Image 1 (cartoon, rainbow over the protein chains, first blue to last red):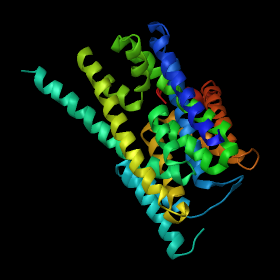
Image 2: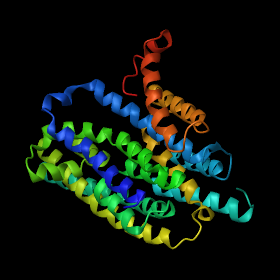
Image 3: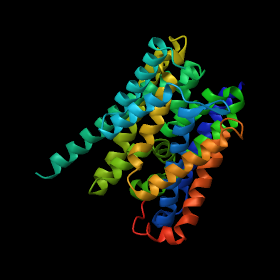
Image 4: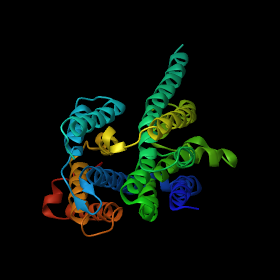
Length: 105
Length: 237
């Protein structure tokens, strides 16, 4: 089995483990507000970190390329309450135009 | 008289959320195949993992690292999936399910099904909202994943289509609704800074799973300092 399949299957089991754990634990755990807040913080931190890496990283180096203006346009659209799919498509369009018409990286 | 409109509003809310969320499946499917996954692998992720943030994390890490990124991809997905565990805790005391229905309920436990369920006023609508939203998102998400995957696999060079930038925008879109409080914003800023500092120092895929948890720890330490006292009124970050 190749590594991509391992990531797909093991990753799915890993994600399901949290879901089934929540249903298996005694109901009194649901009242702990601190753990809910902790999960919220970890989610924000991970998604923000993934956004940054996806915008600036190229392997192990940091670069400024067409992705940054694309992400800034997406940010503007989210701020204006545009739907997710519109902002994502706009980002792709901006990067594609900068690369194909202006020859940006 | 008052029951009927409430019931139909749960149904329309659930299906509406399912359709709107399912549409992201197009971007997920296209980005997954651009990351090098086959159409089948992409579809299996949507069927089995069924948690948007975690799925985007898997393909984001694999796109950047290739096959050696399998372990950080799994860990990123796992860490992002932790919040589903807390939704499950809440839903367990709402749904009262056992056996196979419990296994099924767990699979359908995601941001949207929990949110619709939590926004209902009585327990009957709360249950209906969960099952209907979970099922709608599952059906639409998987159908649109297939559509996106076929679309993506027809493109020869993903970066010429801006798909790498689309992936960054997708993560931004997932975090955006959560940036409502000073603490959340600060957590995000610290996570970004730490992770970017770590990019040149660690193999790709690792900076995220090291940087983000450290950022959360730093926020808790910061809360104990004088500066942190000013954040105390803001608890839900």
